[in-house]
Amino acid sequence: MFDLKFIRENPQDFDRALARRGEEAQSATILSMDADHRALLTEAQEAQARRNEASKLIGRAKGQGNEDEAQALMAEVSELKSKIAELEDKERTIGDALTTLLMSLPNALYDDVPEGADEDDNEEVRTWGTPRTFDFEPKEHFDLGEALGGMDFERAAKLSGSRFVILKGEVARLERALGQFMIDLHIREHGYTEVWTPALVREAALLGTGQLPKFGDDAFTTNTDHWLIPTSEVTLTNVHAGEILDEADLPIRMTAHSQCFRAEAGAAGRDTRGMIRQHQFEKVEMVSVTTPEQSDDELDRMTACAEEVLKRLELPYRLMKLCSGDVGFGARRTFDLEVWLPGQGKYREISSCSTCGDFQARRMKTRCRQRGEKQTRFVHTLNGSGLAVGRTLIAVMENYQEADGTIRVPHVLQPYMGGLQVIGTGA
Image 1: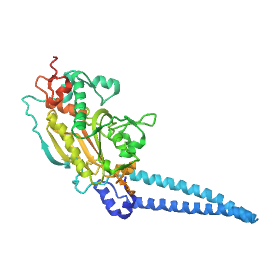
Image 2: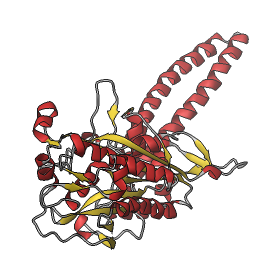
Image 3: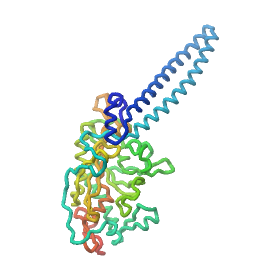
Image 4: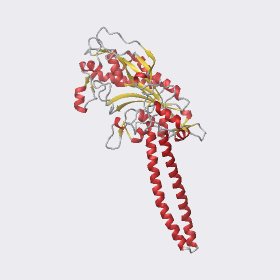
């Protein structure tokens, strides 16, 4: 969400920021609504002041025996009461409309975000690892999983429809091992605090992180006015909603291993086979709450934490800096990690790490201040996947597959698998 004061003082800069996002100029509309809103507030305040004054004069007129004046003042007070109610109703209506408009606009990008239309214009920052050379045709994860009896899409569809999967046996255990390995790495070596949060949230939480009002079709809602979280970014970031934090306690770093739920409303026809794009999946999320001065370094640190997961698993990947047309709604700068999938013969996204500046903090009303000071300022928030567990399962299966359909277990996961070294031997 944007600061109205900034828009009033820098309307052209604001419109240029929207243009980088492919959005139409909005400053004229916003400033007109803002002027109307403030005029209504002023008029209502003036009417309330006159009402208070007239109410006091009624008693004095009656005390002086001037009944005609008292009656006239009482009539004015009654009229002012109706006028104030009407003004307040108009003020609320235009205020709500202005807030809705502001909350529907994407965050302003940092200047160093490259220009571009879509993912084809993202910039490669670096690569790590060398894709394995196979002496057989590598299979995709769904062929491997079904042959092993570890993935059942047909029965999942019977239960829930498309874009669901049932994992069984050693494949299910491998996914569980991945999630445990990731969360252990982040809390033991990267300094994150493990947090367990609800999967159901109120609307305010999704408004706070920017999924609402614009992306409601991408989320699942219930008949109890709860929403299923699309990512634990929603819950972790909102932990401190409405609070004033001590800057000495920042940065706050949290991580959670959670179920995530997405309607994938805009993904019709994309990745319909397999586990790449599911309605229900697991993810290990990282969230940081920082001062404005800390956020740039924190993004580099968070990205490195996500990279370390792939390095420990010895999975080749590349780091991409997203262009203006591909950065998410609430972010100011984003780095994607793309892991090599030999079954597809290309890199696919497995993590996004973003800094949101004070965009989410303004929506959540989360501030910070130095100890002993009165003045507050908005915190900065960051989020990143560390990693998407299902997609990491896919990457492990495809990169560690053998010609006979078995899958070697990465060394770092073997302790989590009870020492198992190969999946599919029947041993």
